[in-house]
Image (cartoon, rainbow, N blue to C red):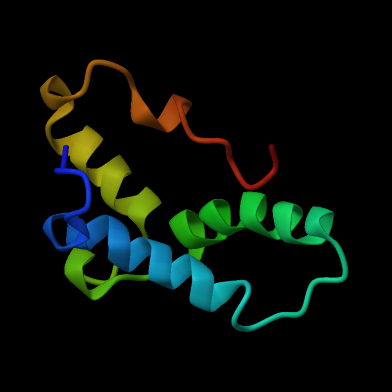
Length: 89
């Protein structure tokens, strides 16, 4: 948790907020709030299943979590593979 009015202590969240903003409102025009809402609900799935990240050695966040679960399942209380809404959900 971070202190109120100290966003610099929460850089990771601030960077993700910037990524979401750049991928939505700065890139597209929305005719209605509903269009923006639909795009925002689709964004996490597209990011988690499609975005390859350098910090994860070229894996998507989903692939990284699956590998972690396979190599060290004792670090998880639930099977994370069952927790993700898949692309077909």
